[in-house]
Image 1 (spheres, helix red, strand yellow):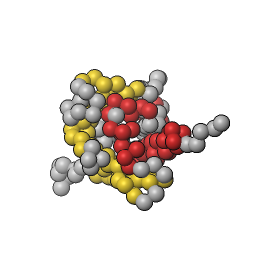
Image 2 (tube, rainbow, N blue to C red):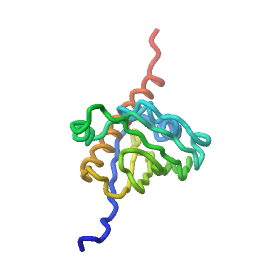
Image 3 (cartoon, helix red, strand yellow):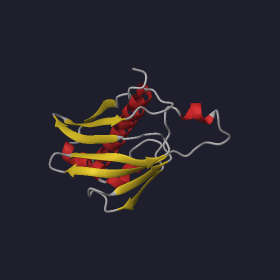
Length: 172
């Protein structure tokens, strides 16, 4: 039916980290107000409510680029700054998992909920990012998959490099 509400988009991305164990990667993700250290093009991540890592805390994220920015920028004289406010819904350090929702923003993500988990594996770990959102105006599902998948791959590479520097051999 034409006026039947479209189902939510659901997706999943994962990234492998070779070397770092899940327990060493987890603190980097558990720092809910520190996403800007890892996510590409994210220039700002500030705590605006609560204590980082405690359910109910809220972060403000801004400056990130999306796959549809170039389309939108062609219609405007100046570049728009993308932003969202994200609320930590739950966190389980024993299971290395947390979930959050986007509660406000200007990128059109309505009813967005995401779960991020670090999964131990032989020789390292993987980060699994599952998400669901109502269809986003001006986007295709593939745009969202690319945005999250590419972002997660860069995050994993940055985390891997940072952890290797921390535990690498000391030079005389």
